[in-house]
Image (cartoon, rainbow, N blue to C red; front, top):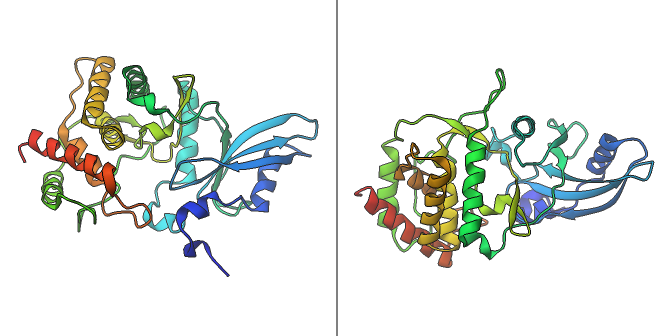
Length: 311
């Protein structure tokens, strides 16, 4: 029999939820609820996200999202990025009035579901179009980032501190790199440690793919599993390398300019954070290795960052 470890993650994450998980979702909504439809949502490499349309015993229809921690070995690779963490974050965002999904229920221990599962509201909108590189979209992304960084945690609600994805104890460049020396210099620069900076609330995985848009307007930010307390430049830098990889250096720079304009004159962005978020890309994901034009754009961006730091 084939197990989840025998197939690529993408196939695992798109599998229909098991019957017991659908039954739990129906029970959360209320007696007599049935599933009208289930569809896998696009994007994402760590969680299985499905939109469910549920009809209650009275005939009302509820559209929700169930987010499942179905990726093989996630407890070994990302043990602190849990259902509990995202559920607490969604409650915090609701209290702050931020544009994000609202928590409905969670089965963190997989007591009823096949894997740890979270249920939240289904928001309107879809992924950004190519126009995200245009100035109006960049300004919206920057404004939303400032809103995120303004969220404060009530007394007693603890958001974990930022941690890099990789500890760089044995760093290696991407397997398809054309600039191994640049990566080695980046590893050395990051090993020196971050500049001393104050922490705030951050998304931690802020990039266009984690935003929803309606008619050219940014309507919500999703995927809050990694939310942390850290320097705001983590989000700025993460967005910048994503824009550099998908578009070019000028788009990444224009986002930084837009963030500075929204944030104010006291904001200082240190290039260290650009390097730190870049080296978090390695070692390569075995399913999604860096290659082709996105890697070439990233390495052009890396070269420019190293020059800015005098490396």
